[in-house]
Length: 182
Image (cartoon, rainbow, N blue to C red; front, side):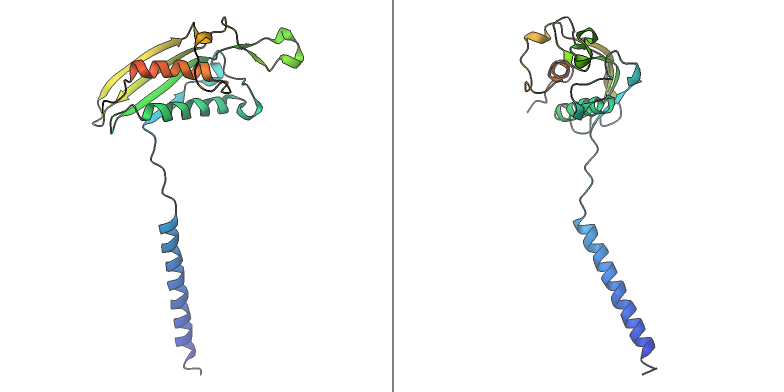
């Protein structure tokens, strides 16, 4: 029996090792693959200094991080389909002034309610670069966007508090990045 002990220990170790390798292989096969990086890179240059970017519409989207995330996701979703294979876009926001404004004189119960009137026009300043697959810059520039007639447009779901700002970005994307020809 004493002579079999080393063999039994070795067999047990080999079985344990093979089970560990099989589990690792299975985990590698079933592990979700990382989503490819978006060809649209959106950054915000010193958002604390933006004209109107520190307060939001609701508790779930409150603050700069929520707003930056919403604009980043919106641009990545909408702009990626307008690019040719291999192209990338870099967008850097320099300033954002959202549609509407807060009117603190309405009292303490209304100091976090955004009032949307035609005098509170959405405005944005941004820099962008369109980069081809070979690394050459196809287009670049600085844009100052505004939409004086934003209240007359019917865009996006009425429940989206950023609908006028997103509509203005949509207009810019249509002008700057025409849809791919089929």
